[in-house]
Length: 453
Image (cartoon, rainbow, N blue to C red; front, side):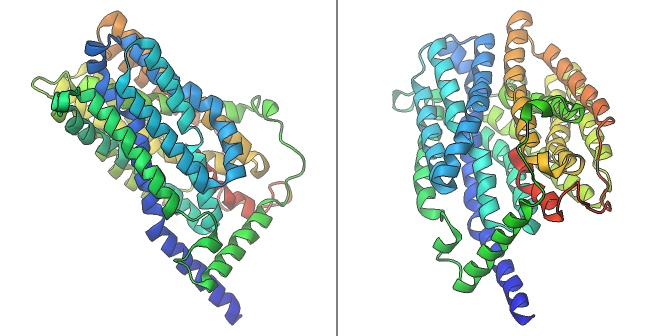
């Protein structure tokens, strides 16, 4: 019994070290990811003035990223399993950094489209690779916490992207380089540099970690191996993903997540344009003001997580989050520019909180044997909202000269999604696992895939 207690203690110590040493590295990578994914939102008007990329072309190019991401996500995951998360994360960072750097040399719409598509292809598999790395290092009991911190980091990264973009754009004319070229060039090279450093900071396997004691390595490796063995119990045969698409519950989940992604990426790519309507703003002030909704979202996600831990059902919380997003977005559409920013902050608190709340529903409502492929389908189809939102806003802006109709559409989408939540099923917390639902370890293992959001 003493050896078992010692092993548990060693696993706890090893996991604590992982949170202190490795998780911060992942968060830095996430910041770089957010910078390179969303920087065109701040460069939009400059690209229009210097290169002639109009609102519709901008929206289409912004959305092309997600088409490429969806196409190359599965091949990227296959290659990640072959080469390992450490090598693949390094490759992803360096390649997306190089593509982002090349954006500084955009000369026409076609070049813009090609580079945005290549950026999506380069980034494909980043989140799954991070989650796979967690699965190889963090026991199930703490994996949900690591995932939650990483997801929350996306809002922090979004908040930082505005001020950084504003400062880089304010360098316009320095060394004869335009501000938007500073933006793409610096952030692209930053990702390349961080990618190179990450290769030397991350360890491929537990046994390679010099910061763990021999006892901690042995205990942690044994714990992960035992969970892997438990996770494979009860899974007989292959899952037909095409048949899964006919499952009404999965279709509902895809529709709800699509609505959440519409709001997230409409704001990611068009928020700076909306903020620029405030009289007297500059590139620098737009960058800082654009950070406000994302900062508010960080606090909202924290309190939502607290409520989530105590709630028996996540559906009411998800409905409230979606309705907050809808009300905030609708109010922003009819308000003055200054008040619009305030209401967009309210909306961000809703749709960003909805994302982690949403991913608890598949875990509790779907059979463990189909959970992983189901989440892959939901994530892939839902992320198409990242194409529809910026492209749709671009067309609306070019046809009407305003993004207000787009905000009305977002409010409607969030309201409809809130209604669809009513039809979702959840497995009760106190429901005992039985032969059909698989092992308890399988249910718990869901948190390692839930963060593909």
